[in-house]
Length: 296
Length: 89
Image 1 (cartoon, chains in turn brown, red):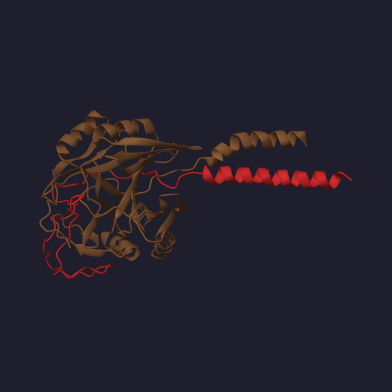
Image 2 (cartoon, rainbow over the protein chains, first blue to last red; image 1 turned 90 degrees about the horizontal axis):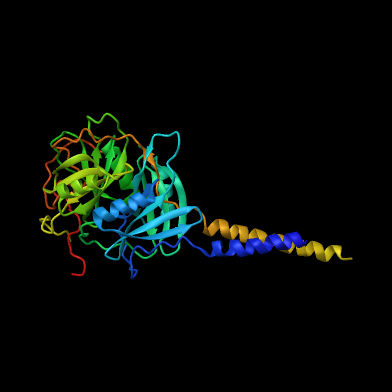
């Protein structure tokens, strides 16, 4: 009996403080609002085997600052730009024996995560991580589309970020690279209710724009035909003032340029780069005067 | 006569122990976010005409007759762009 009491004492001393710790993610929007923009990418998480290196790289490239959250075996850092949370960095050891790379995971706004999960399954998607709720943040789950491209859905409890032009250093755009853009667009249309616009291209491949609230939210593009290795995936872009200069800084900070800066559909330059651990992302120029028409 | 109270006490302590362990598991559990992806893309085929960016807005689209798996927007509707309003205005 004495030994049982002693064991309980140890558990109460060590266990209760651990139990009192919470995975305290910041709300997406402060102060909260009632805005909801289903289909908009509202958060991004990087999974990385080297959190310190990633923080150093993204801080040097975009001026992000970080707040650490360490609970149990989970090490996570929330990235901020000018006081606004812009993404998260999650430390997780690289899987052994598998050909895997670190990646940025896009979270798409939904009203109800469980409904989105069910709809995805009905249309050929898969569940990668079951829905889970977090105080202040909301409820989220990780899914995969029928081709295997991984994305997340998030029902933010503080509302969704407003539809404003983001600042340089913030996420501005997301593109899905797919084997069959037509079928992929149909899947995401069923899931998020997108308006789908097919757009002309010079390369003969299928490209479409996904839109809600009369704003473009993402593009779906056929995987380049000359790629030697093809795996459908989402690619996310950070707004930069000068893509050439930003790509040079990526290299100086230990990253790599995967696609050299070049002019894209909007008339500005974009580049595809990878951070020092190999996580790919895009750099996209967007000047304040780049839009010809402000959608209503 | 002391067997019953002792048994009750052991059960109560056991229940408390279980509660503490459950609390540790729930609140300190892993975060759902971040996934390692298959390393299967080299971006080697991005030619000059390969465009992934949003349109600037207002572009008219040429009509194409091919059927789609998705419900397309009518060609009379211009392609939308990203939000361009400035914060705080």
